[in-house]
Structures are given as structure tokens and as C-alpha cells.
Length: 233
Image 1 (spheres, rainbow, N blue to C red):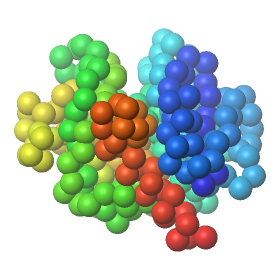
Image 2: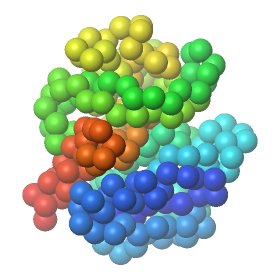
Image 3: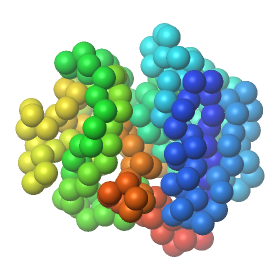
Image 4: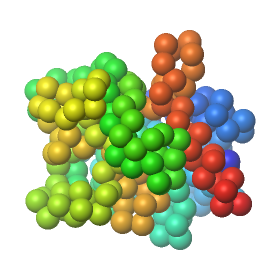
């Protein structure tokens, strides 16, 4: 799997993501600076990592969404290329129009940094192939603006088309207000575009891929992508 990780000023999770991709795929990803106007030849996956692009001094991800490299990402996605945005990357994908909705301040107006449980809603997508539908996984979150919001019709469309792939839940898989850590609509933690090739999610699966971290639940996302690309080859 030839992955390309975008790097913006202020982004600080690109090395975490690079390590996870290297451990799971066996290949070093390319690091692509935001001022580039093209992606490396043969790219299989574009990753927009977490952090604080441009210090999040405007809306989170709003400045990064207008970087030169994002035109190449939009073209790549339009051709069916796989794109993964995590945390600030999710915000950038929404701000750039690759995904619907916005990410707002957490409901309690506090930064959240802890492990949370997610329910995998489907297992038949490139981003969930490494899991079973209904499986509960544990991964970290670290965000102040993870409250996913969209208009009523957009939420209905996302739900009706099965585009919610990850949802905040309790350890037993139940969904309630207590497990919805940031107030996101319908407890949404991750969604895909209408073609199913662009995923945005707030939690950080890249930080749970090694035994030394005490949990490897995030590994399934990356292993599933590798499996998907091998089958497609």
C-alpha cells in the first residue's frame, strides 16, 4: 500500500500515522507538504492526519482546506481514490467539501483526551473490512471540536445510505447520551462520502496498533485497507 500523508503547518500527528501505516503495511508512506500541487505517482491512500493545522486560528481545518495540495486530493477522490481524515483531518475534509457537515465545539466546551468505545456499523467498506459489523473497539480521542453537526436532511441521508461507519457507544455497544462524549449528532464518530471512498473520523485509530499501547483495536482499520487494496490489485 502506497500511502501519502499530508503535512500542514501545525499538524502534529503525522509521525504517529506514518508509524501505524509502516507497521501494518510494511511500507513507509510519503510525506506530502501542503504547498505541493500533486500527489506521488501510484498513491493508493491519502491520509490527512490530526493536529492543529495553522493553529486552528480560524475554524478548525478551514485554512488547510484551501491549501494547494487539496485540489489534488479532491481530484484524486473524484477518481475513486481512498482518502482518510482523522481528527483535524476530518475537519479539513468537511471544510474542503469532501464530506458533508461541520465539526463544532464539544458539548461541554472542554478538550477531551481519553480512550472511548466505537461501534463499527458496517464491515463491507474499505475502511471497516478489518472488523465485524457491530463490533465494539477501543481507541483514543484528543479533540476540542469533535461535535459533528449537519442539517436534518443530511443526517437522514447519512443514516439512510449507511454512511455512518463508526459511532460512539458504551463498552457493550449500546448508544446513549453518556457514551456520546462530545454531543455529536446521532453519536457519529466517522462518516464516508456518497461513493464510500472518503472517510472522516474524530478518534485516533493510529494510536492503538501496537501491543505496547495496551490495545491494538485500531489496527483493523489499516489492515482492512491493505486487504482491500490487495484484492483490488
